[in-house]
Length: 151
Figure 1 (spheres, helix red, strand yellow):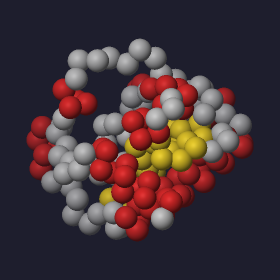
Figure 2 (cartoon, helix red, strand yellow):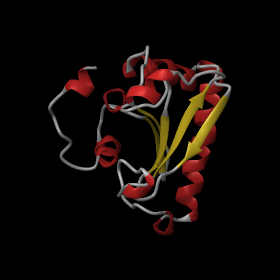
Figure 3 (tube, rainbow, N blue to C red):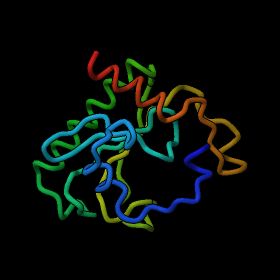
């Protein structure tokens, strides 16, 4: 709630800022690779909603290299693995939204969503009020998942 209620507006690309930042926990960066990184979504659809982001600031699949998308997909696989264990996810929605009309919130920096799902996880809140309820702060989710990576 502190993040959602803040009046601060991002000054640049949130992914580039996270990538160049020195405090991975503050920026919710879980894993860094040569061409992509894994980060918690600041506006998650479900607890544990992660994103694999290419390091280079490009907005379309046509602009990424095969190696960049391969690194991102390796991180998608890693995300699914740790979410299966730590959150006991029973399934996943995996995908990317290219362009504003396709639902991309950040249109100029390509990223792949990994959304953990559970049997019966849909309730009336998103249907009636476009509201999502999350029982866990992002910092707690970060610590849980980071611990799964190093432990």
